[in-house]
Image (cartoon, rainbow, N blue to C red; front, side, top):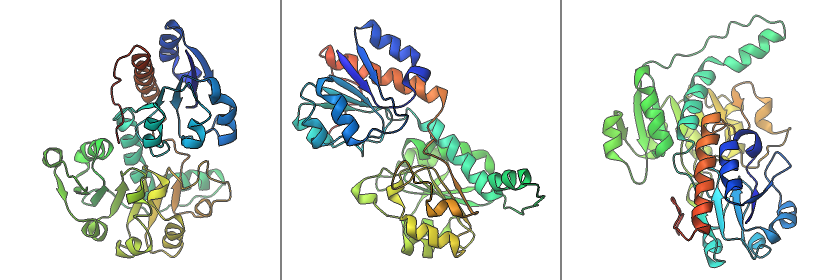
Length: 317
């Protein structure tokens, strides 16, 4: 069985999973680019591939047409918005993911970004290293209202981790998990109420058609002027032009952004020019613990498919 790994750092950080695959006779071809593969790059790789451990490359019918042997795509993570699951199924390709596999890592990053944004930690470090002594006056999290847009695995872990910060927690979700809400003292409200009342708004929804630009000019106008937006979800959820204007004009106090509408983000991205936004390169899930957990799950899913077993976490449409 010949398999392609487009998720990065597999040989470096996923040795246990790699050895599991090799012990079952797999030949592994790895993404050599250190970034998502383009269509042209995939076109060169997929014609003889039986299985894929996919990063955030685009997997659609154009690719499937070139991959007649492909039987399974195991997404290295939870989001499958980069995979046309319906078309994959039409081509006889099973799609799996790893729900919750990176939840703790992303939740920890979200909490870290909240504090970093409110205290401007990266700015202070950069300023000090330039020889300045800026005593920036930040804001404390205690007694603030934190709004969670979406209340799945990651948002639930954020809520759990914020229990000791003495904050009020709100959440908006189309299918609210009231049991988890009660456990973490979360009140479910409408999106409009959450935007109007929250001091910190943390996004935790998938990048699908229904969430495209769900946070835009109209939503920024609802927010408090001293509010902070945290996005560790998907870049498409936020209208980046509207976010730029909201930050530049002082309509909101600040933001922390880990994901972008176009990735990798171009080096002249407008957000990179602002001091009141923290920007990181889609790295919220990048931990040793996540790599081990997710790589073993994707490896097992692929082995299950080729053994005739139904894999865990099969994505259905």
